[in-house]
Structure formats: structure tokens, C-alpha cells
Image (tube, rainbow, N blue to C red; front, top):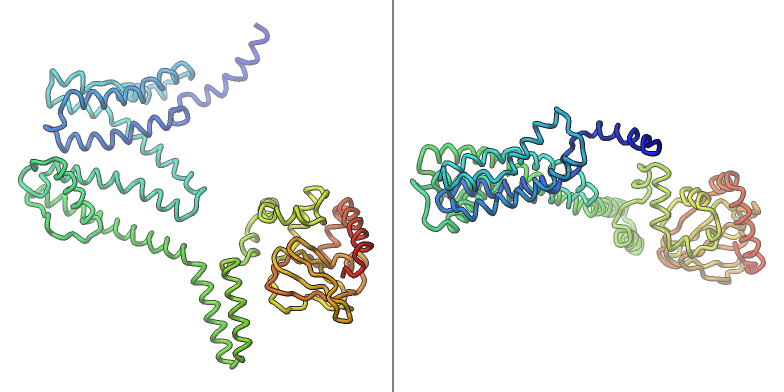
Length: 436
């Protein structure tokens, strides 16, 4: 007894706080039940004589019974129900009962009114709407299309069933129910899209009033769809538009100043490479809006393979790697560009993400050629000595640059990392005397 007392005390507060929370326990069951009800009930009312059959109503009632009663039974045993939630629990229990299929042999067509007991299931649409935030984890285009695609079929179904119930544009219902339903869906879509071809038009006062209501809804619906489609297209091609704007400005600038054609070609090649490799965006503008910790995780994830190849990071602590990665600044260098010359004051360390860099001696001899994953320039930073070689870019090269101030700041904050890089630098100095 003494061992079980703390457990009862620990679990009592959360249960009384949760009380009865259907959505947390069996939200999918409620959503499925609401969806089935939203599809079946309007269709049942639109074709009362055709769909009024014992097997159809019994099948629907049994499905709702399975979806609601079994989860409710386990929920009743697991949770304590307060007076505030008993009414909701009783409403769901009533909605789960097969009232129509039981009363239909006795009441006939009037038993359809018992479907009103299923109205509490409409809360399932509210719970489904609450789940819309999960789409935010996907691409914005997918999220918008997902919400729209989920709502549109159900809206068309409801409006079409209402149109069928009013006679489908005639004085009475048609003979072929499938054709009539498809025709009602056709009328609904043309009316909502505000194109209304006029081949199906209202005949009675009720139909005219209903058509006016749907047309007013269609105006807002069409504006909503058009606005979202325009936004989606802008999102899909927004970066390209910004890229073309930059190219147009560069072309106007070069034309105004009469820049020579060979130089124009170089500028165009640069913009073309920028678009093909990065789609025209700047990493710094995206990462600048993120907090440092999240920014470090993204940078480490983006450049995991690069970090694995660079001896500079191997064996270092994660905190040191994060600090040094955050201090790096991306830079794109064009072919033939000289990053620094022999004798220049050391001001930065370079890591090659993509491309090739030649290390050239003071006499013009190519000492070595560095590829992706290589880093250079750390020797001069550690020794505070002038550059002993020249670094020239061979082709378009994507670099990460760490300037001296940031470099010294990182080493001061992380002494273990300072020792680590000095050991690597010493080994590189003895093994590669021409290291800049």
C-alpha cells in the first residue's frame, strides 16, 4: 500500500486536468466519422427515395458505431469524466447509436430525421481544421494546395447535393441518379468558378434563390482561388524573377557605360553560374534571420561532407566546430581572380567548398593545386607573417572565408581548438613548405 500511494498522487492531478479530451485520445476516429457523415448525409437527403434502403442505412450506422463506441468505451474506462464533459460524451454516444436503421422499419421515411443525432460528429471537421498547422512543415506551395484540395471536393459535394434536392435545374429530380449527381457537380463547379455556361439554369423560385447564393459564394471563391494561384506561381518563380532583374540591371549598366564585349561575357557567365549553382539566392540573407544555435546546425548539416574531408575540423569538439563554422563567410570567386599575393599581409583563412585554386610561388611557379575540401592561409594567420605564396582561382570557386579578427576570437574562446589547429599547421608546415 505504501508503495502505491505516491503513484496515485502523481497520476491524479494530470487526470483531473485532462478530464475528458476526445480529440487527444481518438481524434482520427472522430475526423473519419465526420467525413463519412459529411459525404453520406447530404447524399442521403438528395436521393431520399433511392438511397432509403435498410442495408445502406445499416452499413452507415455500423461504421459510425465502430468508429465511436469502441473508442468511447476505452476512454470511459481510462479517464474520469467530469460534469462539464458528460454532455459532450452523451452527445457522441447518441450519435453512435444506429437510430435510423433501427427505426426505419417502423417510421419509414420519417426515420431520416433521426440523422440529426449525428450532428455532434461535425466537431470532427473542427478537429481536422486544427491539424492544418501540420502542413506548415512542408513546402508553402504544398501547404496551400493541401488545404485547398481538402476543402474543395467536400464543398462541391455539399452544393451539388443541395442542387439535386431542389430539382437539379428542373421541376423535379432526374431518372439516372449517377448522371444527375455528375451534372450537379458540373453545375456547381461552373457556378463557383463564375463561368456559368447557362446550359443548366434554375426553373423554380427556390432554385433561383439557391443559385444566387452559390453565385455570391462563387465570387469570393473565385477571388480566393485566383489569389492563391497567383501567389503560388509567384513563389515558384519568384527567385528567377529576382535573378532576371539583377541581370537586366547589369546589362543596362554595361550598355550605358559601353563596357567591352569580352567583359560583358564574363559578367553574364558569372550571373549564369550564380543562378545554376545557387539559384540566385544569398546564403547570408537566409541564415541571418535564424538564431545562432539553429544557424550552426543548418550550416553543419549543409556542409557535413566538407567538414569530414577537412583535417582542420577532424578531432575537434563540436562546440569549436560550430563556432568556427558560424564565423566563416561564403564567397564566390571568378576564374583568374587572385585571392592574395605573396608578400600581402595575412588577413583571412580559406576553405574550398567547390572549385580549384592554384598556389603559386613568388617566381610564378605553380607549387600545388587545391581542390574541394582543402584549406589554406592558416599559416600566415597563426604566425602573423606575410603571405609566402599567391592564391589564384582556376575556375568558379565557392569558398568559406574566415578573417583574422574572427579567427583570433575563436581561438581565444576555444584554447583546445587553438592547440588542435596549431598542431595541424605545424604538420602542414613541415610537410608542405610552400603552404601560404
